[in-house]
Amino acid sequence: MRTSLELSIIFGFPRYATSQKNVQHPAAAEYTNASHVCYEKSSIVKNSAWDLSQYNALSFWDFCSLQFHEAIVSAKHPFHIATVSTIASNGDPRSRSVVLRHFDSNTHEIAFHTDIRSPKLKDLRNCRTACLHWYDPALRVQIRLIASATAHHQDSRAEQAWHASRTTSRACYGTPSPPGTTMTQFPAAPTIPDLDDHSGYAHFVVVVCHFEELDVLALHASGHQRVLLSLKHDKVSWSIIAP
Image (tube, rainbow, N blue to C red; front, side, top):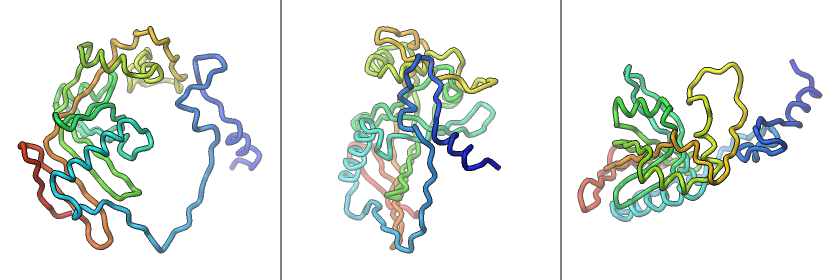
């Protein structure tokens, strides 16, 4: 058991590994102190979930599209991070979190970036089908979609996305060890490259996920609402399904 003094030292004086002298890596900027917050259980739960009964199929698709567009530009949006699930060659499911980088409501595409050395790329070579999942605990809304994924590596789409990305994001692709490599200790934060340093581009991949349906669930104390939104035809349609 650690003493209160030891804990105060641990939590009060954080240190971050960075390869730049006297420069803190931006990814650690928000985490300058560790803290523990206790929440009291409330008997009153405010339900602010989406009310799907206020939409038709087309207006709801427009609303969902707006949410995805906002999620691309705002790291604070609850859908900025998606869980992507793939199937490995041995049949095992694998899930991980990715940052949304692009959304196109006309082509029904969502894209994220990854490292070509990543196990998820091996999974997608084995099976291009992926499942994307979002859940907002504040709104109590879940979105799922099944997509066909296409990897863009060193082509025009990858090049455009690379030049549009920040140097702090590019730093992740210049690391010597592939994602998932077993290591003897936690690695230091990667060096942030100069704007004209494109050494990490060789590992940079844009994964474009094309989808035709959205499965949306909104939790309500008065009755859950779930719909399957179909984009397969020119006219957007939906089906109300059991939660």
